[in-house]
Amino acid sequence: MAEDRSPDPDADVCIVGAGPAGAIVAARLAEAGYDVVVLDAGPRFDLDDRTDQLDAHIRPGLEGLWGMGGERDAYTSSGPRGYPLNAARVKGVGGSTLHWQGMVMRLHERDFELHSRHGVGVDWPVDYADLRPYYAEAERELSVAGADDNPFAPPREEPFPLPAFPPSHSDAIFAEACESLGLPTHSVPNARNSEPVDGASACVGYGTCKPVCPSGAKYTAERHVARAEAAGARVVDRAPVQRLVHDDTGKRIDAAVYATPDGEEHRQDADAVVLACGGVENVRLLLLSASEAHPDGLANSSGAVGRYFMDHCFAGVGGRIDRPTRQNHVGFNTTECHALYDGVDPLPGVKLEFLNYAGPSPVIDALHADDWGDSLLDSLRESYGTHLAVGGLVEQFPRAENRITLDRSTTDDHGNPVPDVQWSIGSETRRAIERANEVQRSILTELGAEIDWVVGPDATGPAYHHMGTTRMGTDSESSVVDPDCRAHDCENLWIAGSSVFPTGGAMNPTLTIAALSCRLADRLDEWL
Image (cartoon, rainbow, N blue to C red; front, side, top):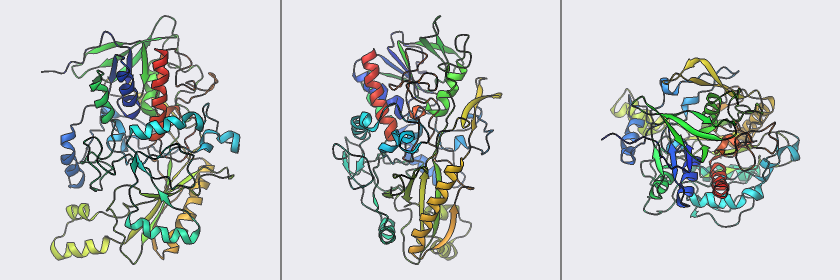
């Protein structure tokens, strides 16, 4: 029997995107009694298939866990640096949390006041105190495991929901060097179960968190999708929204027009519309919805839609030491150092990460090897067990020239122009990467490591944290949404996710996405 993808005639809210932002808003509004419809461009992925997906990840010749690529997901990148957009996004119910690593930190107080404190970037129209209670809610929503042992973290109001994961074997090695260098280390909050929760497994150590967690211990937005559906929401997969249509005034969105696999188009009317399909697709949909009333794209009277695209840049140093490191026993970070983050230096912030998954995996190496027997064993002994690496995320300041536009010379499977990513690295970010490399080298040198590789400013790549393209602000001439995440130009259009971030800091963005989504749901509840 074919799945029913026809419109809901009585929807209060239509949400575009079933990643963490859309799913959290959907769950909270459905549980508040509203009629909620969620439209997602991609399919549902069966939880029972996760072990098969793990096999596809580790075995040679098998790939494509999440179905990305092809005409549906076409894009271009015309900026100074090529941007590999499809390397880390997922279209499907759960979004990119299906294959994320799962680290979740709060932004620091300085991130909300970057211009006031340092004269760079902009200030957010909300501050840390505004989001503080929502951060606590977000940590509960994501079942975060953590400890209050970070001397650089912003103030908290309650313990983490779950106990922190213990330091790994390699964390203990790094701790010796960092202590000698005066670099405090501390635990990492993780959106994965350190103990069983509501029937969900605790982490069992597959070590393949990115790209797939077969145990279900790592949070994915599927949890909130399930909650939303249990409360009566309707989640429609493989229903890519083609455009939003508005009333005669241009100030109110009437409907989302979406396509279905049978080639039909449908119109989902709703009292309110929430865009929650990421920092690239949010922009693309607004630009595809241009009209006589909105000639430059929906909600774009400021010209800011698509601009100020930010990511986090990677910096890293890796090498080998003459002692066991047990690399790849843990697939996520359990220790970090935020000593380079705050302070009076206006350079972008740096978050140091001690990588438990540095170096080759013996399982994957063995499965892909050309030799067998003793020869294979000797090569595995040579390649495994002595690698170490210090990584880091480096902040990008918002720059108008970094942006998402439409490439009208290339179209997707529905004939729509694809997104074009224009991305570059500013001089201030280059200096911060160099600074991170200096500290990373000093840590490995302190350990007596033989350094094998360095990722510096000329080799850096993105962390795939898409931020800033529909920034929030109080001035409708320079921002897209107001402090409540409602579009300045359209009274019933709301935007969820990291595209509303005015600045990005250097902390992984998902906890802030979740906190803002909880807050948006409260504001939308009041508005409805």
